[in-house]
Image (tube, rainbow, N blue to C red; front, top):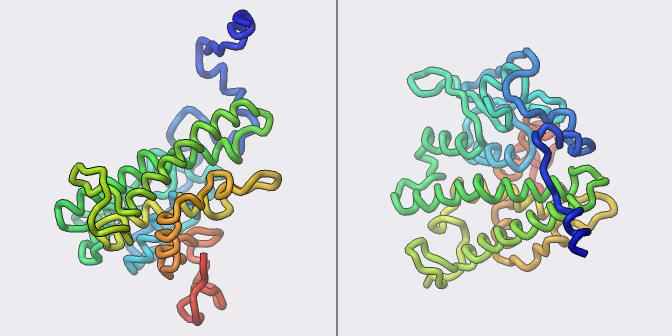
Length: 311
């Protein structure tokens, strides 16, 4: 038995490049490379308004779209097809050296000069600071700190861990059964823990004063100070990704059932509150096939159309 276990022990090769072949068959094989910088030469398109967004309707793209719609400012949106590698064009790399959506350029930046912006949370914080009167990032020192903590939690934990779960659940090579079992278990368990972090906070547990107990005011309506903020906008999309159909595939259980989302009632109620907002509904459709699809005649989110849709 000991000899069998020794044979099964994983030993890395001398160079990571020797393992690249093992990634063949994943949904992003054609664009995955270990180098940064442009792979093609083409400028970014530019519309008429000062603020130009370059994105795609994914959870990382949704959060910036939601904020832009909540702010109600003029902006132009441009669809970036990451499956075709458009994020590696010279123009996009100029805006985002990391070649990840969303990216933006504010041609009315500090001092009236263009300001290139990469990373969704950084774009959101930039916009909140440019439009402080909208109140989406608190000015109170304590509440601002809480808001930033949730924003960084979303970037450092929620988004990356949920994305890793999704990769192994639906995008990894079909034949890599052991790797997929490990990845789904490892990251799925962490996604459940992160959902429980949200659940406990929304249930009114913890007070950002060092106490782990239940706060006197009871369950929370929003993440920060009982006011809708950029923290809610940033943390919502990845939960919606799990609750929706983004990680559902034929022959597999639905992601929401697989992870047991029903055990997080406060998260569910919070999602329902946010998802009922027309600006959230529009924001999630920014760069979904076209820049602003709700502007089409007859679209349920078109301001000229009576009523709003439900997510």
